[in-house]
Length: 94
Image (cartoon, rainbow, N blue to C red; front, side, top):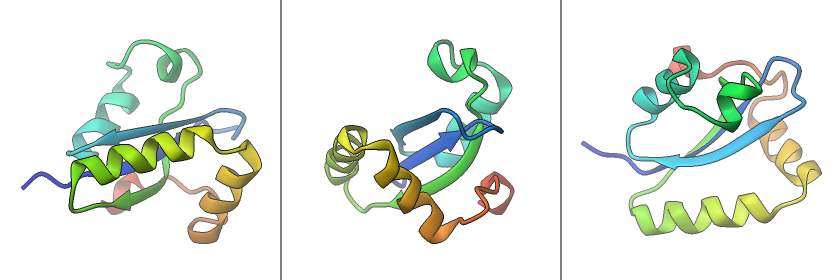
């Protein structure tokens, strides 16, 4: 079953974050961690899953992704820290 998800990745230093949307979170994060995804996430080694939200509709997930991408960095940090105060990699738990 495909599950729409908005996710946030970070690197080990927490200097950079990436907001994305997918319907297969486990596979998508694996792609980031394996370095398959070219571009920003590969360049800055952004491969730690630090936050995600589940949705029932892909359109809602895409709208939320767009909303989060417009947020100030401080707001994104606060959102992450509400559920993951240590910025642990959540990938092993999914």
